[in-house]
Image 1 (cartoon, each protein chain N blue to C red):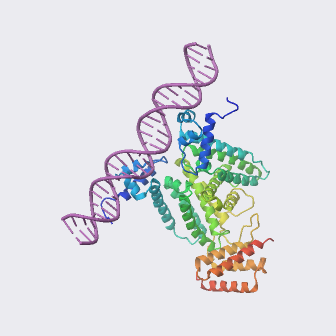
Image 2: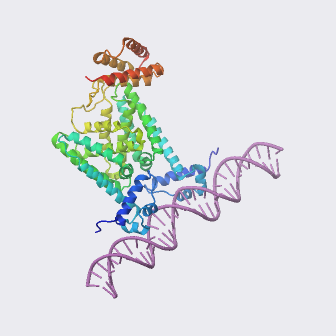
Length: 242
Length: 242
DNA sequence: GTAGCAGCTATAGCAGCGTTATATGAACTG
DNA sequence: CAGTTCATATAACGCTGCTATAGCTGCTAC
């Protein structure tokens, strides 16, 4: 392992690619620009990354781990719903700070790459939501809540990125944030929402309990017990017609 | 103007481009493929559209006008909030039906093209919301409401497109839709959320579930099951120290 | 030492891309 | 029929992502 002095070609390529990608505002960046900026010839790139897309993926992965790091550095405030707000805002902030990277991460449709990113972000958000669920604050399962929140979060962030930086109105973010959060979580556990289907409060309580179990005492229940338990929940919720 | 027979090269180019763009699943489509499919040589393309991007823009514009047409063909039901749902669903459906086109329209960040599309979609949605504002009361201005709804709508649609068609769960759409709508339109009186203390954990959730069970469906669980269940609750609650 | 081996990097070049300078044909207009 | 304009074709340019091949480095084995 090298220690000091000049960075290795691989690192130089990564940094050059990241820099050029950030500068050149959305327009494509050529491998020749990158290798020239990294003072390296073409085969070096392909030796280390196999592909242009491989290099870009590495850049994106770096940016994504930065994103996850920022997410993880957010302390739990003790108020789960407030935590949800912070994570939402952090997501938006990251998107605006790394606009190009963000659009590659979340605006792209590559059926291979994006789901990986999205799934990771989703999983992390699900953890936060599980904590909210443990506090009886959730009216739907953490998984669905995470997907919904993340989708709205991405939509808002893309929209904010798309419009000129001067005109950006962060209230769009705050407003949509509150909309989704209030539909997904209740600040007080007294008022479970009865939507069009008339979801009974049993389901709400069951979801909360289930989440609480998973968070705080995952080993108190064997998997078979848990399975049976969930089966009950389903049976109960499916028959609650009245 | 030509009338019948074979379509003019310009139309053939448009159709070929649209077809190839729809088929080749996200991967780039070359001008040579397009001109070959349209049985035309390169300069014809550039004569009519100036640019590859110009051609693609024309394809997108065609798709977008199709989208607007579909939007406009939705009748007003008399219930403005119900109208919002229909427009939301129509947006999602269009996105899933024209996945590639959609991502070019809304997933892209081209600071030139996208705002045009978005602004048009936004303006149209704002009209619908204005009607909602006239009939029942909106919580916020139609303009902000339209932006928020559209952002969430786009986020959800992109997310649905991104995941394999087989696994698509449209409930994500319905859920987020209701979230945004209920925050934007005062269909039922929902509390503007203010935070409270977040103490409860497993015990509270368990008690809530237990109470809910007893109230609504006491006979859904056999006595032995209930006994085991209550045993769990006790086991869990006795160790939760928070 | 030096022979062999593995890991990086460089030379030079390919096929494909978007694009265009130039030329040719077709279709009106006078 | 000549003139003008529009529409298409020929052939090529410069650029792209990528690679077959070869050379250089630093290592271990004898």
